[in-house]
Length: 453
Image (tube, rainbow, N blue to C red):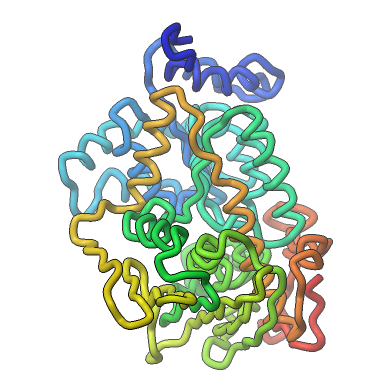
């Protein structure tokens, strides 16, 4: 303890959280004991859980955030993803001096690479800071375990795919605050200079009271991983669990639909500007273009009208259809002006209030790690993003419930939902919650018919 400031130094701060694991029965479950990695130096041991593209990027950003970081363990359901992730980290297409320095602090030998459904436990035990970047269906379980183990945490959005998962995250978020564990969630607009300045000015009343918002994630879509390509690689048929885990974006228990996985960023900005969450939602959506067997069960477009407590609305659009109007942005209308896009504010008469130049703004994906590790190195409890991450996630789930059902869904109804999307058993030979028919097609949500609560 620093006698002058009364704050914990970096080593004491990290180890105060880790003590619950190192000193308890949990640590003794693992052949590589966590205590072996808590030395007398100031090295921050980073563990990665979820070795996809986002996890690979987040791990490198964590290493670049502070020179005393070291990547010591990686877990993923698939061993080939671990190998690919480590290769991509060590052999980037372009590498500046900071990246080269970070690469030199990757220390993940084979014995600290864990595949399967339970590998996250070993990574948590071996790390001071854990990065949670698996498909979001697993986030509540992994976040809860990391908090129980007393770890500092970076976790990607969204933080769950259903209301039971949200409630689990909120309970763990409260524990994290009680334990003074920093938690940063990858809603990076909160760490982006243009958004910070823009929303601050809106909250100061630059355009009056907000009466309408418009939020968009309209684009051509993302990757699709076909069953055939992986069966050819494996030289055998995939189990249904394997296939859905490989092609996770198209199954709600894993992804939650693109209104959740991507559009959450824009819906979160709506909440941020409105300083609250929606009280209800109604909307419509469907799938017109993305209809193949490898497109699972999710929609390719959604439109939602979110109502807030003061009666104002935020109109939400998201679409995964190529050769259409693309827009990923947000805009707001106030009683005395407009905010047509991030960084721009105008009076009702058209006079410029703010025109932010993004030219020299830092990369927000890096900033969120820079700020997290600066707090850890200073021994400060500064970031508690989990609750906001849960609210943003639940707002997006509320939108999905509205489009899938065709009904008005209230926040209270959505939060109380007992519809659990996760499998009862996590095993390669277990059946996922949704199964294909004889032709390989999956049941699609039907408004007016499908159960969403």
